Amino acid sequence: MPHVVAADGVRIAYQCQGAGAPLVLLAGQANNHHWWDRVRADFHTGHRTITLDYRGTGDSDKPDDPYSTELFARDVIAVLDALGAERADVYGTSMGGRVAQRLAADHPHRVRALVLGCTSPGGRHGVERGPDVRRALAQPEPTAARQVLLELMYTPVWLAAHPGPYTTLGDTGMPPHARRRHLRASDQHDAWDLLPGISAPTLVVHGTDDLLNPTANAHLLADRVPGARLHLVPGARHGYFEEFRAIASPLVLEFLNQVR
Image 1 (cartoon, rainbow, N blue to C red):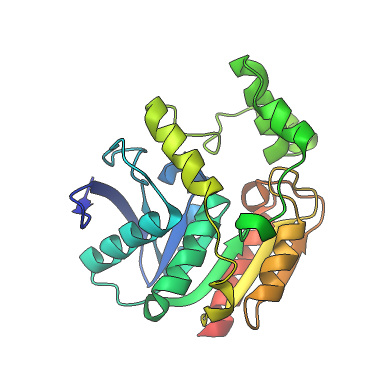
Image 2 (cartoon, one colour; image 1 turned 60 degrees about the horizontal axis):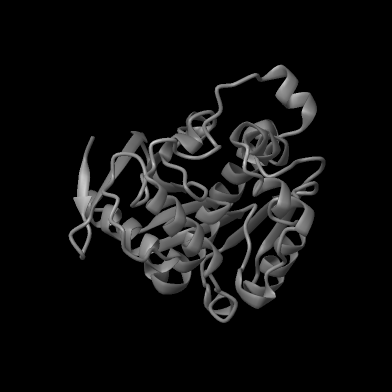
């Protein structure tokens, strides 16, 4: 698997599939590129998809140093530089959407179009998940906590028809320090003051039944990013892009094609 060496010497693994205009796909917190496995091929009609294993995940280095969404965004730029991709479309979901915000705000000339999925501006303006959800996720029994996460990601009907394996529940190979670093990076994200400066055409997508990252955050983002479009997927939870791929993938592709 190819790697690029970031400015601080950390090796970042990346993956390319398909051919066409570059499209960066950014995964959620504590996940590697396999987050996109079930839907990645949807974007290969005219796009070369580019993913990476965040530092701390997959085949990338896992230093026990501070991580941030700003740092993750710089790692994406290092990958684009290695590929000779001057500009790319960017689609980030969950924490990947937070990284995408930093990419578009900090490196505007590198982002042609932006899709923010099931994500939040963070900081004091972001709407936090409810205390009942936090308590359920924090329970000490791993199997029970995993089941809670599954039910936050997908509807019961979908889970009954898709028994797994699942690729969106976290990178099982991450060391504990990297999991803590990812959690802190996501929790410390605050792009509120940066969002009005995003110049890339932007689409915000969110499930109406998302309790892991409350749907109210989609409205905040759409109102804060100039000219952003908003699309809510009825009945979808946090994993809307997978369970409702028949809606979400064409929606994103149509948006990207309209920007051209």
